[in-house]
Amino acid sequence: MSELALKAFRGLYPSRQLPEMEVAYSGRFKEYNGNVEMKKFGWTIIRLKFGLSKKFQETQEEIRIGIIQHLLNRVYKTKVKTIEQDLYNNFLKHLSTYSERKESDPELVELFHELNEEYFHGILDQPNLVFGQQSLTVLGHYSYSSDTVTMSTALREDRLLLKFVLYHELLHKKHGFKTSGTKTMYHTREFKEDERKFEDPDIEKKLTKFVRRKKLRLW
Ligand SMILES: [Zn+2]
Image (tube, rainbow, N blue to C red; front, side, top):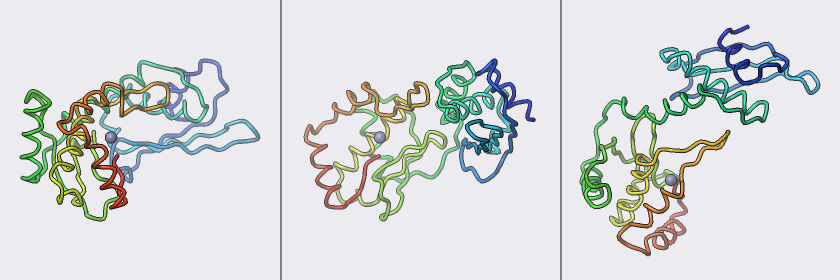
């Protein structure tokens, strides 16, 4: 029985029947991630095996308890809140601060500076800015853990759309994400309010048209 999992379990459920629990660290997770496998006997969960990214081995115990509790809430379909889960969520939110820099694309860097002056009072820290592949089914993506915006090269043909999607991704950096129970909110009300400040009020329509034509999706 894993002592860590036991602490996590009892922190959530002081009197629920204990399953057998095991924690294994694995290098196959790219980022701070984890999963859980369960074995049932009838309706009763008798065994849980938590797989956590190796990266967690360097984090404090509370954060590891936090992710296990997050997974337990999913397994048992509960929404019990704990300080450890808050710590874990805060840890994820602030990860980008410690990420290393990569080589950024000059065209995106130029657009970033424009956007930073126009919409962020020049105070947003520059994330890594890179182009992905033409064949991506996603127009843009912001990774919190590596502090990187990846843009589809399909947008290169339209500077205004490229600027808007980059703006959208930078808003992800600015706003982070909110969690309630087991749900994670990325496009919050504040996010959408900011998004509407973009210079071209018809930009969403233009993007929809472009996306329909290209059959791409915006995340
Ligand atoms: Zn988004």
